Length: 628
Image (cartoon, rainbow, N blue to C red; front, side, top):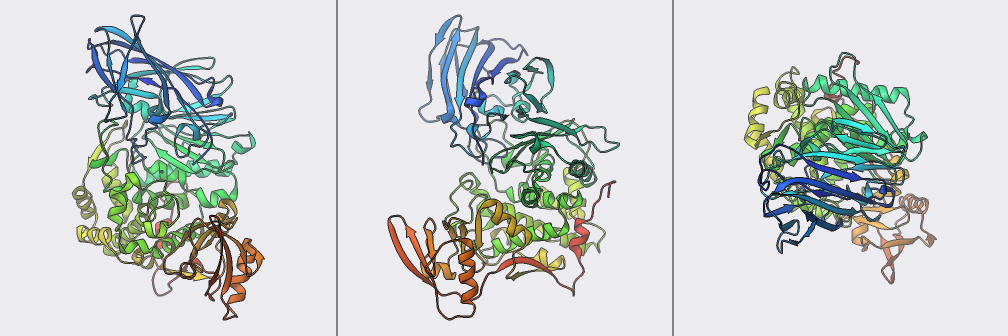
């Protein structure tokens, strides 16, 4: 599961628990986004008659974000009225997301409030989802609903007014449109929250429905300029092949139509899954810039896979009936790990990546996990259980903590499911693969969105139907291991091995160029920004033994002003010298001199063929769809 600025205003939902009548009439939610460029929305909600006492709650646990991330601090200016009189409210003194009201019985209740988005927000919060030219509206950030009601029971009809001339896309069905105001059809709160809106002044929609498909698929993009969304025909064709490949993989579709919603600005990258759409954030020109595509081309594939793995079939601990119940993430190594594996494989099968780019990504993940001292105290299983506190921490001491920008279960999950795939292929004599498991476990009859929860036992049974093996013992060992080494069994069984050389892979070079970072973790043992700021230090490495500290800044190398090139020069010179590398470092108000005893030069990970084994990886990456 990073960007610019935006704001919202949101409102209140009630339903049969608090309605004095049992009418099926939906609430009327009106969102005025005409000031969205100022990072503020104004919302008004008119509700059927309600009972005298009720408690309304703001969504706390957001599906796909795996944490209580509802931005309650951004909600302000809250007012309720009934029969022309203001109705007082009081926040619960324990649950800050709950509001208590006393109002006239059987009176129509109106609610108004704003939600603002500070420009310093990140992730999917409001201030990070808008610029002056585009926005993404996630409805959970602009709604309240009655405590005790399920999200399926609450019915809402939404109305959205956009800035003049803006275009939009959403999986939410439209009833009418007049000028810049859209009235959507009444839906459940579940469907509303799972149907974000993408809108912007610079907007294009591409039909990526494969020939013969009866469900429509769209690639909807916004950017800061028309040039950023002028996608070449071959790229659009690759996304059409992606849709084809998902159909060939799962042989079912659990949606009526599908929208890839892509907002591009800043340097932010992330995605949030929904059954019939995905909310994808990429840097400006992230779809057309070759270097960004080398880094992030699998994002849309990852989020689309979630329509099956995460939305249709969902771990029981994440299948809550409303947005207040805590979620349990013990199976996130499936929810996110398998999705990460499949998304990267599908990127190759659809032509978004080459096999070489995939191998570079696997090498990057493998080396990352193979140099994580935190593995000796924290299991993979613990990274999933602790997911609600694992997202978004500083990268400092991330190798010891086992999380940083994203928890380890994404990358380790990819390696784990690569190993599962090789086991199935080996034990079946090459006649079956993880694709067969996906068709059996996530397939079934096509139709509109629904949720079928599953347990660990269900997962083991599903894999056993594909091929007999001690899956329970296999997963127990992998999930609870405290080995310092990464699980590279799948890499090796696929006919490859992790190796290091003094030359950067194209992926490593792209990350350095686009992310402004120097990845010296596998040489001196530090991840640096190109400014010299130390993002992380791996315990036990030369940088660690020299006393380099995350958060400090290297200002000079061997008496030369710091730059990436000067650091590289020093690493290369040290290969032919016994003298330590001298680092001058600013740590807070202090300037310290460090001596780093390292003489092995630059080291970057890549995969090498193991000629004594068959190249199973090439078989895994082979396209399945009609348009091979």
